[in-house]
Image 1 (tube, rainbow, N blue to C red):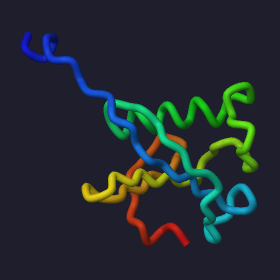
Image 2 (image 1 turned 30 degrees about the vertical axis):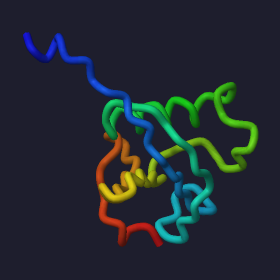
Image 3 (image 1 turned 120 degrees about the vertical axis):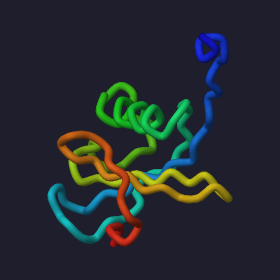
Length: 102
């Protein structure tokens, strides 16, 4: 009951998208775009990013990379709270170790 009365706070996350030059490559990730995304959790923010970068009408005009797809990595930078890396797998976003971004 208490959780229904408490409104969750929306957080603005600083996110960076990393992609390889060619779809399916395992190495050579480069940062292709940086943006701020609102969400209540990391999962919520990642869902919002996926929705923006996979619908042609929503993609920002200055974005010069391909659609988000399996194997792409997103960095969520929370400043002093830390940096979190997520990779897109066929099952969805999974947290990964920074070492995988090369």
